[in-house]
Structures are given as C-alpha cells and as structure tokens.
Image (cartoon, rainbow, N blue to C red; front, side, top):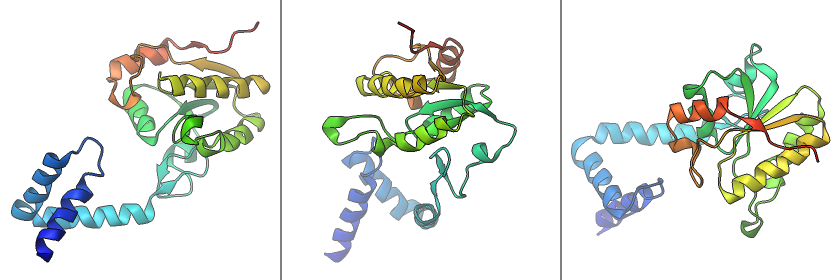
Length: 202
C-alpha cells in the first residue's frame, strides 16, 4: 500500500509542471520507473541542486547562480537601454531570437490588484531606483499584450516619464492575449524592430 501511495505522490508531484495533466504525469512516472530509473535519479539530483543554488540576479532579477547574471556582468552591453519583461523565460527567448545589445529588468509578474500584486511585488521599487541613477536613457516595454500587461506598461511608462526617460513599446505583431514565451522568433524580431513611443506628450 505504501508503494502505491508513493507512486500516486510522484504522479501528483509531476502535475505541478505547466501543461501536465493527470494522464501525462502518469505516463512520465511510469516511464521513469519502468524504463529510465537512472534518468529519474539524474533529474531528481538536478532539480534538488537547482532549487538550492539558482536564485535571482541582484540587478535585473532574472534567474542565475551568481549575484549578477551573465548579461548584467557583461560590460559590453548597452546600459542605457533597458528592456522590461515579465519573466526570466522571456529574457532567454529574446536573447535567442533578436540582436539586442541592451540590458533587462524582469518583473516576475504583472500588476493585478485583485490578486494582491502591486508595484512592490513586481520589483517596481527596485526599478525606480535603477531609473533614478540616470544611466538608463530608454526603456523598452515588452510586457505581454494582456489587460494586466498593458496596465503594467502604462504604470512603468509613467515612472520613466518622471525621469525624462524615453519609453517605447514593442510593436504588437504579438497577438492580443499571447505570451512572449510562445511567440516565434520572426514575430518577435518584427515586434522589436517596430517598437514605437509608448507615452505621447499631451
């Protein structure tokens, strides 16, 4: 009985992954146990090490094992250009898809007052300090084109305006309601190249 419970716990644990339902989790569990126990052990080891050693970059908040990620530690990157994204996965996608030489700031979410997610929860206090330093001359708002993403972009655009920093928004070749993580590289390249002023003077 204990073995059956442990198997059920393994299946339930695999369901924490996005897009993994009951049947997929069951297939994964049975595959590892019946066909690739060594792979399962290696996976368990890597998961444990990752949970222990991977944290957030002190400057841009992406995932890294060091205090500063490779991008922030790279002195050849353009510090005057700052791309604002919602997740670390989007940093990886942009780095793979386009020729961008600036730096990033990862929000870790988007403003959603109904869910209790305010400016502090997505690091806007940290972003404000970075903008106040005067090194950033342009921010590229690459939040997702959802209602919350647009509200977040508007809020950050107002912050930038307070420091006379140019705020641009990536062009919406990205579909409304879409997530950057799932958009192909060609669409991302077009959206980035076609970015426009986000805040217009009244």
